Amino acid sequence: MRILWADDQLELAKTFSLSILEGNKHKLTFVDDGQKALTLLNDRVFDVVILDLAMPPGAWGGLWVLERLRDLGHRIPVIVLSGEGRQPETIKAIRYGARDFITKEQASTELSERLAAILGELWSEVHREVLTSFPSQLALAYKRYVTSATPQGKMRAFIDIYEQALRLASIVGLAEAGLHNVTISAQVVAQMARPSIGTWHRIVQTLNKQLPPGTCLSKFWRSIEEQTVTEVVKTRNEVAHGYEFGELKAESWLLYHQPSLFAWLARLWQRIPFSVFAVLSSSYDGMTLTHNVVALEGESAVLPKRQVMSKENLVLHHSYLEANADDRLIIPLYPLLLIEHGDELGSWRAHCFDGWQSDRNAPLGGGEQLRYLELWSGKRTDSLGSVVKSLPSSIWRKPPNDR
Image (cartoon, rainbow, N blue to C red):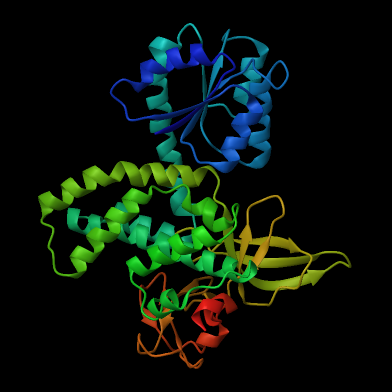
């Protein structure tokens, strides 16, 4: 567990921390004021914050941090350290969103137990949120995971959660690469013709290094444990090459890897860095465009509708990525992701980019048909009309050293 501890009395905080370190593999980061805590929470990912109220900036810097987190929409669980349980500042901290408070006199004896209780309660919230408000790629895969009846089925669904996460992260990164003039190498492009889970993993790793800090991809990717992804990719390849996991072996594998999955989903739940939508209609009031959109969220094919404001024109029925940041940046996803009406009234279909029809080793001609994976059915199709040259220029053009 990644814990951020903010307290201007660092030596005392480190003494209190000994009670939660014994027998646990927690990673603690200490800071001595609220501004440093907020900066770290914007730049890195933690599972929980332990926050002293009486510290800089000002007399009650802990309250300032809680207020800023609330205003930013950040949902990281916070345990407040208070000198006195009934003081007005402690009550205000709970109103600002703190999960619990502990007096410093009780910290050595009660902190570990309170921490475990809060994280246990938190998982029930995260479970509901994954199914209802996470990107549909993850929500659907997670639903298959929690409803699988056998250890082998659950294990396959577990792997699929990560494969869908890698596919989604790749699509987000490819769209952002076009925005930032980042060109994909010819070697990676060649592998994208028929991508595997390993291909998606390499695309994410490559783009995460090439894109500037603060992109949607980097914020999404930093919540995940790279070691777990590597192990999942390795297992997926073993299964693809015929290795069979029996019931006991699958149960053991799941028991070992499930904590990493739950921790990742809880971190992502704190603040999902982007949303995906398709435009249904638009109106203009002389200053701002208002778009009625359908959001690709949750496991249901009946997707939620909402409004998105922009200053630029958006193409009807095209899909877009909206960065959940102060500038609310909107990035085209078409034709990497297609969203269209489903067969049943009120239902929708989503087609995710899945390579193109071609010989993997043949040079691109520009007319190759794109292949897609439909989310709810799991079927692959290559008859949707888009061609390779309609992909973002970051994929199509060659970098200087490839010419």
